[in-house]
Length: 341
Image (spheres, rainbow, N blue to C red):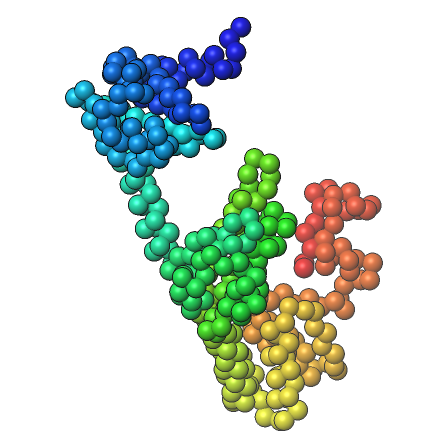
């Protein structure tokens, strides 16, 4: 059974890149990719031909650069591995092989940066402790603060300084859930903010993404709409009053102040969806007022049903008005009956 160390050694030997390592005691080892292509490197410990490699072998320090050996070109990068150091030789062929993918990643990064920078909404990013990492131009507009005054500072500092209040990152970190709140900025804007936690594999918050939108104009529009609706209501009331003070309403001729008062009340009641009881002696105009209420109500396009309840026997009143199902009582119609209401 192959041990982990043997597996790693076999894997390193098969990589299409060169690796050169140096231990603390000065031992230098070279993987098979380099040793098979550059035999002289096997004796390089005592006979370095490249000054850069000789300096690295002595000090462990190396500045990333291009290096040419035996006609082959490498991009060499230095890495610290635990307490040892290593050099990774990327051959030009490998760089060319991954070049399209690298360019694609670079383009994706540039696209993301432009989208992030030009987003109309503010995007505010903190780490898991509330330290500000990134701020876009939308945040600068919303808070009236340049990014340089925000990045690197903890949100508690920003709140205590009166720059942002209230901050929601601590609540997002504590609950590990989405949090939405309203902020009032020092430049008089009302901001709606939503914080979203980004969790690691252990469920800890590693970053908080806070989206902020200026709702000042929206609130102003809502207030203007409310004022316009109130003004429209007053105008409608004035028009209604003017109509009621005219010579005729729905064919009704009004002269006495008492009838004008009754008609005014009927017009007000017509705008409400409720049951209305009109009482009075015979011939005083109860049906006329009922028609007026119907004409001025939201049901004016529907039929006006006139029922003389006095002509219906008490025993049949319910069935005549509201109808009945088939077989509801003795003598009922077989198919039932639809009521008048």
